[in-house]
Length: 82
Image (cartoon, rainbow, N blue to C red; front, side, top):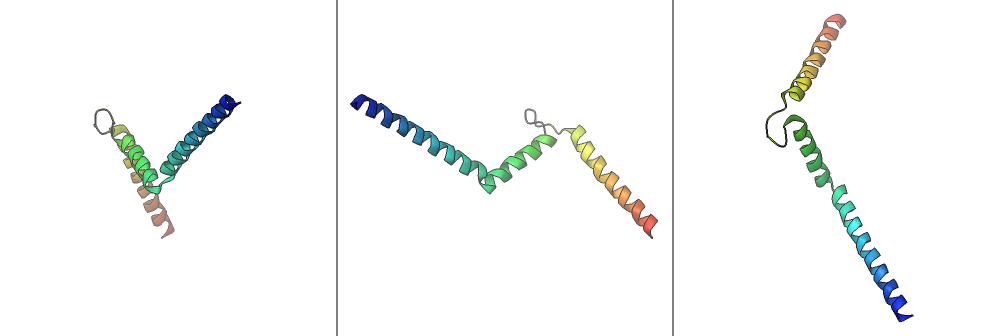
């Protein structure tokens, strides 16, 4: 019976330690600063190749093209409206 109790206590302690580690990880992931850093890294990776450090011109040109397109559409709408 003592061996069973020791095994049960050890199992409960191991489960508690895993739970504490999981909670710590969730608190870290939910931290606003961590979220902002993760999003910044994701955005940088979209425009700069992580391995080489070279700019990803195809993605940059897509964004620039989209911005220019929006500006053109807004100017056309203004001319039509006035």
